Image 1 (cartoon, one colour):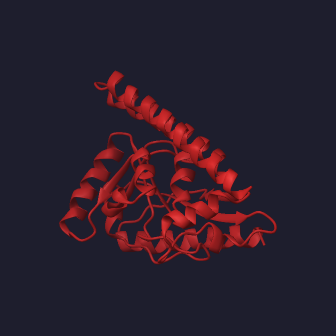
Image 2: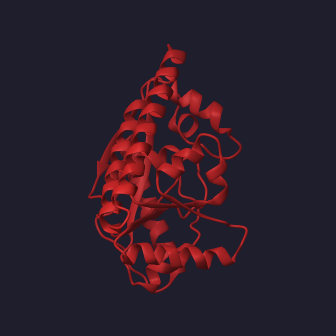
Image 3: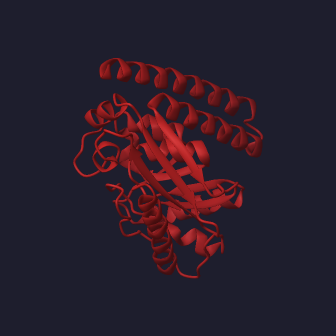
Length: 256
């Protein structure tokens, strides 16, 4: 049963993703001279893609609070590659990710579908380029989201935030939307910390095969009621970390 479930989910999600790729390519051609309409329609396609892939993967989404409308600057904790599907479904926009992710098998195509902009963390000068790009996207009406931890965790706590890419929110005095992501497996299954969370030295293919062959899992994403503004990126990182940690704790406690 697990093997059949894995084959069906992989086949369905690959075919569905290919269809969405085709529609996005057509959209880019048709609206090549209208950036605003192209962005709106592609974001809509990304949302459909996220919900569709979540359905194929047995991922049951519960949204709490109000997702932001573009333009937005979104920060959340990071647990697994499934976060990409989740955020695409509920609040599509541009993602920020480290450059090596683009070449990872399985995850690479997911990030490219999700309108990801890649940063080279080995080159300090790339931070300036990314900040300029992020600021430009937001001022033109786009939504930008990223995971300031810079890596994934087991989902039980929020790792320290890296403040370098928060500078555009300071320069533009732009409100920041905060969100917390929390996973739960179904009764009788191993905990989400081992089944869904993908971190450390876990290899992607075995982890994904095990997750997708299972009966499914739940995820809750909670958006903060109020946005956050600060005049210093380190202060913004500290305050955002505190609020997201509090929301995550509340989500985990309400699920125990």
